[in-house]
Image (cartoon, rainbow, N blue to C red):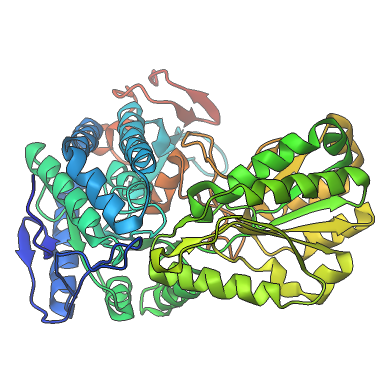
Amino acid sequence: MLELHGQHLIGRATSAESDDTFQAANPATGESLPTVFHEATPGEIDRALTLAAEAFVAFRQTSPEDRARFLDACADEVEALGEQLIETTMAETGHPEPRCLGERGRATGQARMFAELAREGSWVDARIDLPQPDRQPLPKPDVRSLMFPVGPVVVFGASNFPLAISVFGADTVSAFAAGCPVVVKAHPAHPATCELVARAILAAAEKTGMPEGVFSLVHGRTNAVGMGLVQHPETTAAAFTGSLRGGRALYDAANARPVPIPFYAEMGSVNPIFVLPGALKERGNEIASGYIQSLTLGVGQFCTNPGLVFGLESEELNTFVSGAAEGARGASPATMLHAGIHHAFTEGVNAMQHRSGLTLVGQSSTPADEAKSEAACHVFETDAEGLRNNPELFEEVFGPVSTVVKCPATSDLEEFAGQLEGSLTASIHGTEEDLASHRGLIDILEKKVGRLIFNGYPTGIEVCHAMHHGGPYPATAHSYFTSIGTRCIYRFVRPLCFQGWPQSQLPAELRDDNPRGIQRLVDGEYTRDPIAR
């Protein structure tokens, strides 16, 4: 079992220069946990990123197989932490053991998925246009390009996924797969979890011969640490999952630098569900049950939590609301991640209870224990005029609270879909006939979200190659990019073009003989074949 020390991990060294310290708290008890952690100083931030920049020189030249072995070793080392990691995460987050075990499996699984992506290699998007020296009126040069790593990446650990979107989340492992060193800012709500996972990564780096500085971890609970990481001149990109306020502040700082950098922020999202008439008639109670399960999953602390539900006024919709209310009453309160999230949730629900035109139709029958930072499920109901009079309902309240909006006509569904801000997801429950008769609604939603779900729910996201976990602002800062799935590697690379270069000096992926056997676009056609000339 590793003994926690609460210090920063800067390459292979530890550091604790500041006397400004903090401790995590068990959200279920409010008790401070024993390890004392230190606030990072500007000097420690500088050393971490300077070391990362130095490591980039060697790390970007490692082979895809070397990086794959590193990622596999990271997954092995994280699993080797065993019960200590699970128990530490439970103590810092209030998550039950099955949730922690499942999240660890997701983290190690996605690391191995990126290892295989690196090994296969076609992700680099190699493109070759062969020369035509006799072309008139001007010869065509030999032009070749591929995706090239950008340099040191800063990753901000997320509060709601301490294992899968944190120190060893998709941000970190995709950057490693691309060839970028990583400096992680540990989340102050679960710093011991962060330290354990960071030490596992460093052990893997040493075992696989990665350069010192390929990974570092710094702690901090103040805005100054985050700003210092984003503004450091060696930082070339940053990834963040959290609040709109925090993400926007860091995004603005990234763009205000003398040399702006891409800042990939995943922020607020209401993830609407539209329940269409055919589906309500066929399985309204089943949809209501699934909706409540999605709403309460992880105590409603998923970025894909369904905050609004829309349907057309009918007896079937009334039955759906009754079923949802019953499901809410049967949902047990549970501990939220930390006191700050719980306080914001409580304030948000209290504000909703005082809005005119909004009715609380169902909430957990068992009272929430405030001393344990528990949240109860709440389901509200309103009509079209109620939503028009309460535009605040279009804003996310993070936690297990949602509002059903009863609309008199399809035109109202389309009106409200048009008023939605950018969202990660939108879900449609319906029949094929429903889809055909609500094409206008779908056309609007296609412009509003990153993922359209049919007869399903937004939570329980699948980590796979085709997944897109992004959306128009304010869901994310850049709607083109995803933070889950293998496409997230493209956040940390840029195209690099080679013109007229000799074969011996080209990257392997661009040579005529295609030694890696990857798929390439050669003169406009995809092929894995070598170029015969």
